[in-house]
Image 1: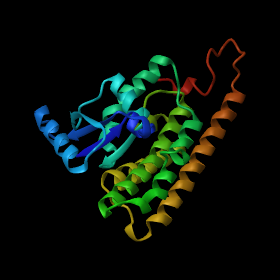
Image 2 (image 1 turned 180 degrees about the horizontal axis):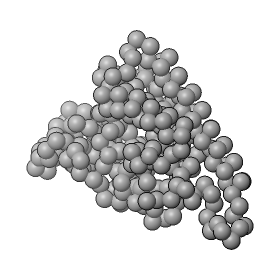
Image 3 (image 1 turned 90 degrees about the horizontal axis):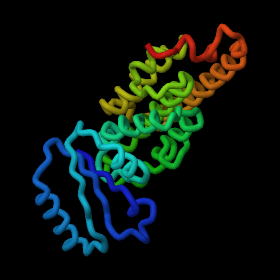
Length: 249
């Protein structure tokens, strides 16, 4: 279903002593099956590193320690990255909450222009070794744009809640409607269903990139304007006006 390389072999390959692989499968097999597979890789490829395999079933969450380790440095070898995110997002968000950190607009923009952001992924499509790999890259790039909008919405709401249904429900209009459109198109139709326009994919990607950037910029400006207006010195307000009407239910 999905194979993810992570650890030192990703961020410092010249000094790595082993290759760590996270494998998502519908039904986990006996560990010996994976050991046999790595032995075959050693023999066929004359691989210079030890290969360690962490098998997980689809839908099985990673614990906080492993989630941080994997997401710290990873490379998708097979698949779209969907199962990795599903397995790690909850643990990472729990850590964020424990540390008292809130998502930021700058973090949201990294999902567009960062090293692993949407623009970078789309730019590397020419390196795809097959049509299937290119398709996965396109879908992931569209989903990164959705992530950027989601993180920006969380930053505006000053919340660690990352479930897009709840995030969207707390946004004021017209951002609520815009976020719903972004979710339905980029996250559901283009990413999950893979139903993006094949004939004009670059044009469509650039259109949505500009649209998401505009969404983030306007949301950030509205948040700053609201924060400046808030009568925080008044005894009637113990929190900024931006937070008060958007408090968690």
